[in-house]
Length: 479
Image (cartoon, rainbow, N blue to C red; front, side, top):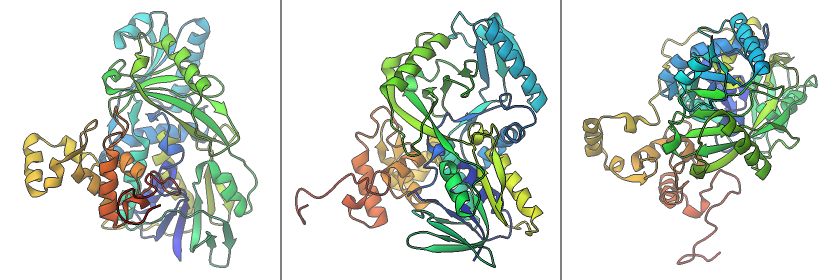
């Protein structure tokens, strides 16, 4: 029996697992997917928000500001890229100016540091490519950007290195309460625990119902994005927002930590919790709005489009509560959930402590993890030294992103281990460049096959039935 089972391996589950791995507790993470960070964490804006947007006095506001302040140190410890690039909310008329002043006052009340109101000249001095029609802006210099799925992968990997277990492809079918705690049951296995933390994202309401809690519901809100080639990444240096609406912060324009330019998201409430399709209307919405903010966006440099789903709880605040005895639900963690995740983890640990569970710190907890991109960051001398020790780092598999065979093997062997093509992509960026995997994918399939000791036709794109090769055309059994 585990002390604690965490259901959900997104950014909230990941940060919670890492926080709890600091203590002398037995912890297990469960997720229904073939890899971690496969839900909302996989596809979002990657912004570490300063904290001026959530309403004063809410849990969302408090944890956003605290999480944002914690993020630089956590990213450094986990070897994850974080850039403190700052953000701008721009306005075009008197109505926008009033909204921006409201955000400024709210940010001050929330404890956001260094906020400033800018006039047109000050704005254009910061961002020369901003539309000349803009008249004012809210400047939040403490805002930043990161890679959300890399952060979740690193946090879970660090937690596993500190003793946490991970069970993937574990779809929770039933939860039974017993004298000692709970039994979490899938179609092929069950896990027992004294405490449960429900961090199941879009499905947190379904998990809560299994514990008898029907007090909240979650619905998906789809956001579509366009990603531009790296040659466009310097068009802006800050994250650019328009004034927010009731459905969120609206379409943004931001550089990414990888040097691309990201446009989006749209904001459409839907009912299907699995619908991550992109649409013509979504792309048109993005194209029609971003030109209002920034001049001369080169749309012919779009290399991919994608969409993500946000878990909307409907209360206007995060839902972090006891759903039953020793059963904590962490639900409705929409934006700024990524920013707040480290603080949410600390908050949940505090809730556990209030139940009487003993949180005794480990003497040998290691907070550090080697960067998944360490090879790129080495000097030429250091790279050559490593190549002399291991020739696999000399073979570049993904030329768009300059990813070596050695890095791909590291991703397959390191916690949490990559077992399919997309899992390797999220750890190494192989396949995320201009050709979108057109050239490197066959080589990565061979590496996965060799490392996992399974036939290449058994390798999938993203787990389940997402087979890439259905059989051999020459030699062996015909399919």
